[in-house]
Length: 220
Image: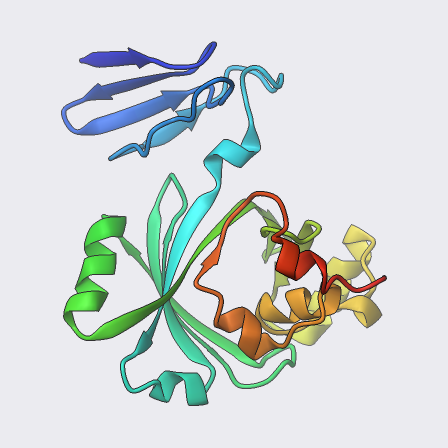
């Protein structure tokens, strides 16, 4: 067993290729990129023991080399969520409630999944960071999402529109304010950019809003 101490109460315990990260915080030093985290342990929610931004998930988004997927609104995504790694095929036909199709697989290694896609000829479009909390309510999947340079928002997935309306009522949300589609339409709401421009950004990472994007902020 190996124990490595980091900032304040943060330490990393590893044994037999498995790892536990305790109280993830960054003060004077950034935490390294850990090879393996099986679980994160938070002893309590004070700011000196838990900083949600440290646990931002990272994703790599791919298209085919001929960009045929772009024409049909499709992409492949590998996402490291700290507690699991997923590989997904997503296709957005339109910005309606049922306009996005997703097929998701759980894989065992982020870097190997990224390398696999590169080896079969896929081209990496971008690297993106997000923060997410996942909940369920009456069979619905509810995600509290944070993306760089945007206000936090709620993503709700249900089997049909009627169930969506019921869940929205319980959460105090208005269906009239719902947005359907991918996150690019949210960027389009807050900045004077197009979905095509957002999809062409090579990196979307947490930090200060870039000056070129700040100049395009909409007055809402």
